[in-house]
Image (cartoon, rainbow, N blue to C red; front, side, top):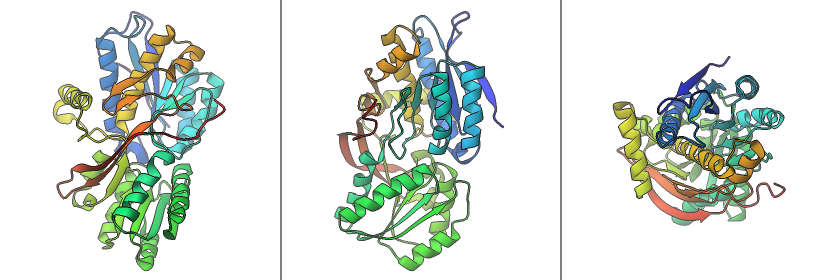
Length: 376
């Protein structure tokens, strides 16, 4: 089942005609670990827009539905938001399995959709835009760091058994092989699994130079990392899906992990400093660590507001067209979903230190997402 809550954030609604954002998300299940930070980022974005007068003289409201981090939950949540609540847009950060389950409902409902989670690439729909990274922006960043900078030659790949896990590791396997490395193992666990014992035994036996994981954000990152550390495995460890907030929660177990992404709290920019201050001012001691999952959701709400303003209407066709044209300069820098409904992004390689802080060690500006949806 799913829960739904209507929220008025940042002041009163326009009298009887708010613009309603539909937010399906993993309030339970694997993504529940990261959901609180995502919710805070959304609340901040909506309050900023409403405090500035809204869009087209209308305020934003948010309707939440718990997709339970699953395909079945997403079908219920999307259906509820699109057909019962008749929201104006869907904006979501959730697993690929949930996105894929929701897309047919987006198509039937003919509603703009912004997907904000990094994913395996190639998801195309006439109503969908994506402001997060794809393999073409990530894989070389991580693998090159291990092979060129650390001398790694053998790799063990670990993922959750769904589109993101298999898709991203498939690209990783191909890239490693092309660059002269060797994949000595590739293993998958169900998205709701918490026991990694057999896979870690295979890692120990293969004794790779490096491990790269493509697990669902949230709980799987926690369970795998803790069990890997308990087993005493000392190989280089790169994690495609570990966000900064979850890394902090892992404490000493996170030390040394390499991360890749488009956002870290240590980004030295005026826009990021402004964002972090606003987040702290709004939530105080309850502030969650902003992350690779929460900031794209924040950006997406501002991008939608700009698209509605540019279109001069909430009409789907006009807004979808405008979403490819508008730019929001937020905590990650300027974001425009102009490349086949995807965004060129500045990519960062980072590493978690002994204090639990994430330090950026490499920056690659304006990385193109490559061919994703050439027919759109």
